[in-house]
Amino acid sequence: MKASTILLLAAAIVNAAVVPTAPAPNANAADKRQILGGITSLAGKGGKVPDPAGASPRRVELGSNSTKAGLGQAHPGQKVVKLREGPYSVINMNKMSLTGEAGALWNYPDVGVSKPCEGNCTIIGLQAGLEYPDGTNANIDSGMWLHHMVFLVKGPGRVDATCENHRGVSLPHLDVGATPQTSERLFSSGNERTPLIVPKDVKAGYKINDKDQFAFIVDLMNDNMEDKVVYLTMTYTILDGHPEDYETFRPVWFDVNQCGTSEVPSPQPDGAFTIQSQPWTPTFEGRVLGLAGHLHDGGTNLQVKTQRANVCNSTTTYAGSPEFIPKAGGMGDMGGMEEGEHSDEEAAPAAGESESMPGMDMGGEEEAGHSHGGMARRDGGHGVEHISNMKSCYGMKWGNNEVAGIQDLKKTDTWTIVGHYDYNEHPGAKHGGSDKPANIMGIAIMFVIENL
Ligand SMILES: *[C@@H]1O[C@H](CO)[C@@H](O)[C@H](O)[C@H]1NC(C)=O
Ligand SMILES: *[C@@H]1O[C@H](CO)[C@@H](O)[C@H](O)[C@H]1NC(C)=O
Ligand SMILES: *[C@@H]1O[C@H](CO)[C@@H](O)[C@H](O)[C@H]1NC(C)=O
Ligand SMILES: [Cu+2]
Image (cartoon, rainbow, N blue to C red; front, side, top):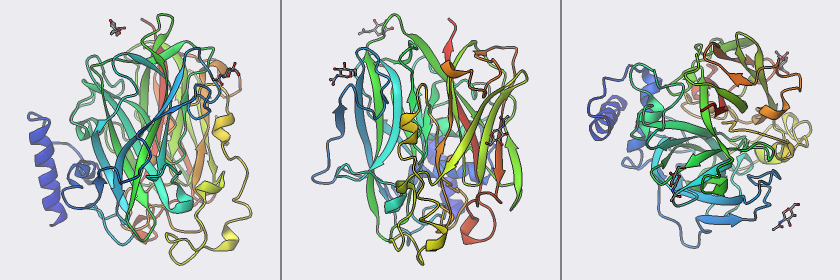
């Protein structure tokens, strides 16, 4: 089937099944590709599959003191639950996705995502992960990437703060059969797997009820020579019910390609440059709990600012722990790895760096260099260092010189994010194995305790 046929088919399916009255998407080619996830399975390009025999349980109750999502920030009565979603089959390096990426499950919508509780509960921590069926970790060292995931919540009263007034179709919402008026993007993660953690001295949470439905957009990458089946994990730290003394926080998603695929073309092939979002004027008021940014390989830092102050400078760490470094001679490491470029400097410490970070650490986002435009290696190939961590800024620590006194969200402010890249410092991913830079991203997710 030709790509254009597939696009039309995808658009027809999505429009017919989901939004009968949707106007024609005013989307560029990159944006349209997001819709394709929906027909990925039909075309035999991977997607959700049944649990393999002998797979670990889909729900795992971790101890209330688990460092996984609670990270030691024990709130009285908290529970830590890991849910394994999927599993998803990811095609190998010798196969192409519908959109032409080798070894990729491309922006695959999953509207059958489980919830950590029946009825009411309150989320005070989140962290995404990737696992093999037996429960072991899946990361770059075995050729698997949690390239990108978006966590949407659909339900009464859910409104996406930054796409609510978007004109035309909002692609992430459309992809899971919703709109910005009926759902919101709560969280996102990439391979760096930044957690959201409400510090124990802050009484605020995201209140879930029985009408809420969870949906994921899942984008995974397989550098191996055989197909792989993996589970996307979401570890929830929750409180039962809606404790009266806990306020409600709302997510605010900043993006240089807001309400689109989040991708933008790299403005130049080398050197330093910035990418910037449209300004956003808050539609509600509150107090900022915390935020973190997301960039692709080549990124140095992402600034979140208002006209009043710099709010957060979310900086990148590259190859901070061994699981983020491809194994020399591994299946996915085509042609082997230049030993000299790797090992020594890259095997830096910092394993679990984000876990030692106190306070609100947040839904950071994605990861290391997923280049959505690539025809071949979306990771930029061997010998390239990948982002393993992005710094979070959290509300109770505003005095750490990152913030000039701004703790509140006001309707009189204007918010902007600026992604800083420098390909001389860190190589970016290439498009289709060519010398052309792949598309890049600039995102930040902020959590705001709403003044009600
Ligand atoms: C969890 O940690 C707290 C504080 O360190 C301790 O008092 C409590 O006994 C621990 N609970 C469990 C189940 O280990
Ligand atoms: C769930 O929470 C809502 C709002 O806080 C409340 O009105 C409702 O009674 C709760 N339901 C149950 C079963 O506790
Ligand atoms: C943000 O971090 C970058 C990288 O460490 C640094 O060069 C820059 O000066 C910082 N910007 C601000 C406004 O603090
Ligand atoms: Cu990204």
